[in-house]
Image (tube, rainbow, N blue to C red):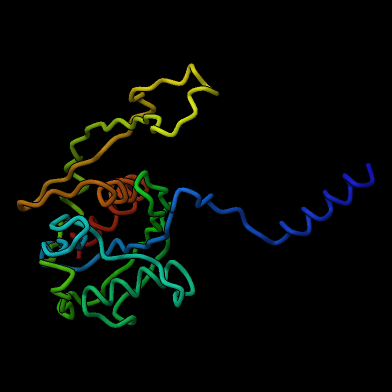
Length: 222
């Protein structure tokens, strides 16, 4: 037992002060985005980007400002602000960060760390045309009063050619459905907001529905 106790103490020392994190054997990487709230003539609104058509990944998709975390970022919040400033041509003091939402471990690789913040003056935006084709805003009132369409996606897996079927002969050789998940679609002004952006938006609207409605009521009474 003495050897076992020594080993347990060694492991305990190695893990002390360390927070568990996702296993990254599946090539997971971190990214952060900002859900930006802005003042517009239509009231408090959410700002979205349309990714540049010349981009190699998800060209033309609607998204929030954000991107991959870099070693120089001291936090994921810093990533969200830096990427927002780079994409929208803002300074850090133009963005008021209000807090973080639940992060998402996606099926495609990135771990998304979403934050909510306010862009103090929408007129200061001068977006980077190499990354963004256009920006648009959607009033919070519209989003709260118009629930999204909901569809379902299915995930499946299939053993590769190198799978050792000799060791596990009962393993299916064809595609096998594993689970399903909901996909949300918001439509506004000819734009379709869906995917991870819509999932983050949907979670935010659900979590803060009462507070958002109260804020809009106070805005209307001013």
